[in-house]
Each structure stands twice: as structure tokens, then as C-alpha cells.
Length: 323
Image (cartoon, rainbow, N blue to C red; front, top):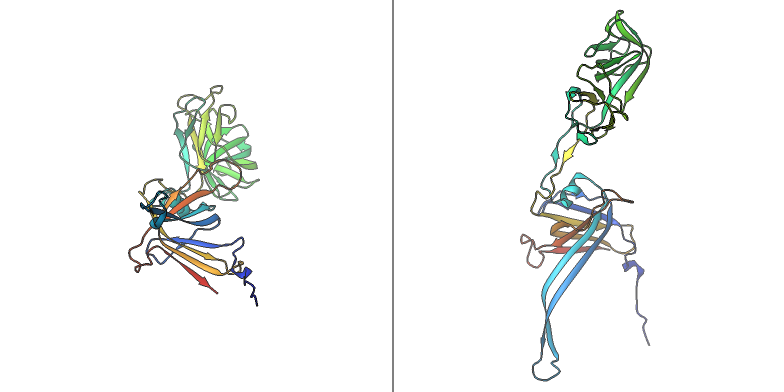
């Protein structure tokens, strides 16, 4: 009687999913690597062959393994600081937060038709439009009689003022005063502008965005237009908000070695598995698209190294299967 061969689809991983973690070699705490663009394991075996010298055919007598190399490749989709630190061969993530503040008539060395960096992110100014009573001048501090918001006048024209160093929120219809009931503007409009206030040093002449300069307010780059009227000595005023910011210095570490753990999702087709790689040398492998279509992927290759702190015969990696 012939017995049929047995097979089970339960042993086949099909479109597998799971999670991957990384931590210090020998460590017991880990970061989640997040969404990955594939995770592949490869094993390369090199051999040496010994052939017979007793006949012309030189038949193969034996083949010995001379070298083995295990590698892990994956793509990092999530641009967390820890993921970037690994990929960029960095030894630290440093905090460099921007505190909220303002530029107060800062003199800048403009270069015709080239951007210069004002050194701050997310630049704005506030324009208060309305009827001016009395005298308001550049440098005056004004206060909203309803909102109690305050600001310093960076520019004043007929029918409006522009203010920086703003605290609070001005509201339409209130009197914004230097001296109550004497020197004030009754607001008919309040506008937070994606703009800076560029004037001559005296603050009497306002330069115009798009005519005299172009601006990237998000990153603080300003360009003097050669066809405009910006002159030597012109000054810039603006507000900037608090921004949480970190700095990673690429290639500051000679190498990045990590412990990697992969666990398959328990609802995947196939047996549940946990792969533990004790010591992996991490290298970025390939181009990282800073501008392009689709998701930006950090392509990573890791070489599995020997961890001598593990038991003999268990120094490289282990695979656990859960039925």
C-alpha cells in the first residue's frame, strides 16, 4: 500500500507581517522600528573544494565550508529620530529646540537675488487695520483694551500698524492703545501674516514681499530682489513660535551595532516565529530620496556579527517557533 505524502499549508508563511525592535547589544529595552519596507534575511556560504590528483578527471573528493555570512535587509519607512540615528551612522540625537521669541529690527546683510538665513523657523507678523487716533510710532508698545494682548509697533502707515513681540490675541473692534483714549487704533481687521516686516532703519519705509523681497517664512529664508528697493541698513522684524527641534550629526559614529528582534504577527498564515540577532552591524545601503514620488525609504543592510557573550554555538542568532 502506498502512503501519500503529507503537507500542511499551516507551515507556509504567506505575505508575512510582524514587528521589529532594535536596542543596544546586550540590552533589555528596545525601540519599535515601525512600518518597514520588507524585512529579509540572507545567508551566504562560501566553500573550498578538494579534487583528486589520482586521475585526469580530477573528481571532487570533498567540499568544506570556509566562510558564512548572515545579513538582514529592510527599509525604514518611519523617519523617527532613532531610525535616522541608526541609518545616518550617528552616535546621538541632540535637542536644539526653538523658544518662542521675536526679531526686533535686526540688521541683515542682504545679497541680491540670493537667500540668506534669518536663523528662525515659522516667521509671522500681525497687521492691525483700522482708524488711528492720536500718534502711534515705531517702537511703541500697544495693548488691546478688550483682549489685553500686547505688541511692539514695527511699522505704521495710514490705516494700519504691524506689530511683533505679540503676546495674546488681538480682536476686531477693540482699541489697541499706546495711551488709552488718546493714542490708539480702533481695529476693523486683525491678520496674522506669513510675512516679516522689512523697513529702512528708521522704520518709515516698508519693503513689500514679492516686489522687494521673497520669503520662505517656514524656514526663515529671505531673498533681496535686485529689481526691488531693499537698501543697505534695512532691518527685519518678526515673531517666531516655539518649535521642538532635534539635531543628528551624520557619520559621527564609526559604526552602529544593535540587537535586532523580529516577531511575526500571530494572525499570519504559518507558524509564529521570533528571530533574535544578538549583534548586527547596521549600514545604510542605497539612496534615500529627499524629493521624489512615493514614500521615502531608508534602505538598511545589517551584517550579523558574533556576540561572544552568548553561549558557545549560540553567538549569532536564534529562531524560536511557537505552535
